[in-house]
Image 1: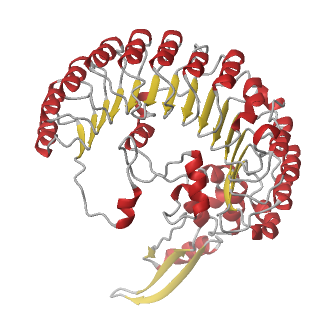
Image 2: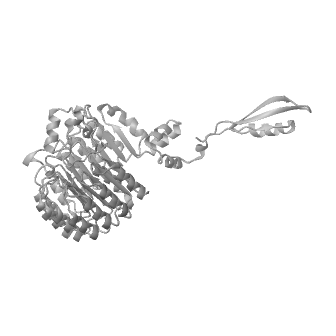
Image 3: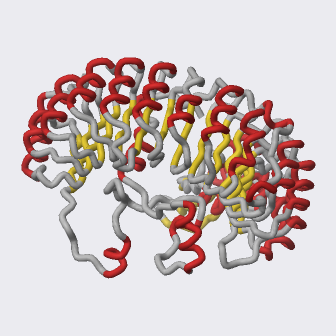
Length: 539
């Protein structure tokens, strides 16, 4: 990079001296001469070779740092080995850093953060089998990174409330905190909320230091409630101790509750009464009923709602939401085959939510009547997923093909459709760009090929779900209730990829929380869909 060499021949003796003088006077060139005999007279061939030149030396540090920002982490590391100047600039311009947070990191912290003195986003991750950093290391980091805006802690089990309290005092500009499998408790969390007045996003997963039962110390509200926009709670036995924080966050826009124990109906009533500006709510495997959905309907600005495996929710609750949250754009329902949500609730959505763009139904049994109403009234519907629905057949697919004019993405899994339904898609949905079919046994490869041939720009992904040779581990794993499987998703928590030979203790823990180690096709597909067509997100 930035290096070149040039070669020139000088034909005459008279010009040799001038050329040699001019080139030798430069610091970055060398003149070489050799005798050469010709018929007329002796000639000397003078070869001028420029020394290696570093053209980046003329670039200001700021420009070089800007170039480094376009490189990935690996390329940046390689660039730092080029010379001392690049090493210095690369370190000073790096704002994001991820470290293996084992206990032996402590003595390296001064030198690390002397080089990386502009870090604003820091991830500290430790594996389950190693001892993590403790309070001393975290405090030392906080003294070196007072401009920290994002912190991610994973399996830092040696951190205590005292260490978190000192960290909070030193890094008051923190905007985003994500912690998982840590052992500090309510006092450490409250210290962060009391000192980090700019905190906007809080994600907490498996916080081991929280006290169980009625003796649990409440978390919040704190000064952070004025700035908090997103709260995500995952796999907490006593997640309801965050109630004061949620209720006090008047500017909260997104609330996500995953596999948190306890009855949430009463708390959701208070939350929805105090925090009415929420636009996105995710409820997954928590104890909530139509009472909680009725409370959520007070959030009339709601645009995104996920109801995943909440078997106590029924059509009545969905009707409440549809009638009052009329600007709903995205609706995901995993009915867990409880048959409590069906045509009645979906027809209410069709009548009251004309702006619906994305609809995912898993383990729900809609019929032609509700699908026809959705297709006719929701003219902006672009993404539709139907999975594990016993009532979705060729007639329903034909209805979708005829009436969903704006539909661009269609995902169908484990539904009783056949080649006839595929033929209907060949002539309908003029804006369709992608179709995914999985475990629809009556759909043949020939039908998929014909669909591709008829619509050359349409991407058709067919997985017939033919049985393969399985080993013992595969057969023991069982199947998801909704019949959906997909490629493993890399997550930030190592526990998500735990081996099947886990201890009985971890198995019991997962059973109590209702964890699922698998992922499904629909969620994976919709991650990619979320950015399609420039749809605005409300996070």
